[in-house]
Image 1: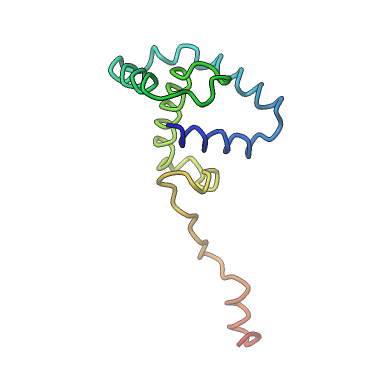
Image 2: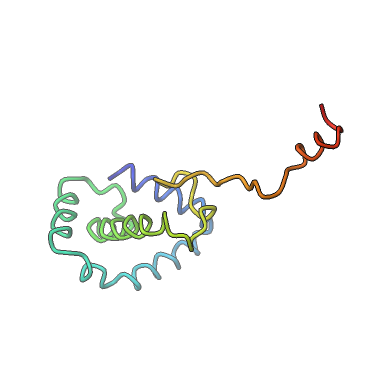
Length: 123
């Protein structure tokens, strides 16, 4: 859990470098997800709660460890729903996203090198 949270915090710092923007985003997420536990099955909540009891909290300044883990769990589920969604661009996924395929090369139009070869301009 510590590695996951550290990577997540690093990713937030990269995408949202301004501290004030992080505070605004954090407040928005807290407000939007205030009833998140109501939508997670009891068995999953108990499992997450047990995991938080057995693991030290490396970022207590970020709020309740249990609530953060609920949010990470929800974000993880949403990301898996979006990975194969044709409406979501793969270019928008971070390069380290699990299951994200590298962008496909556009073969519909020839690149400059192949055009130059056909015209005898390049060896």
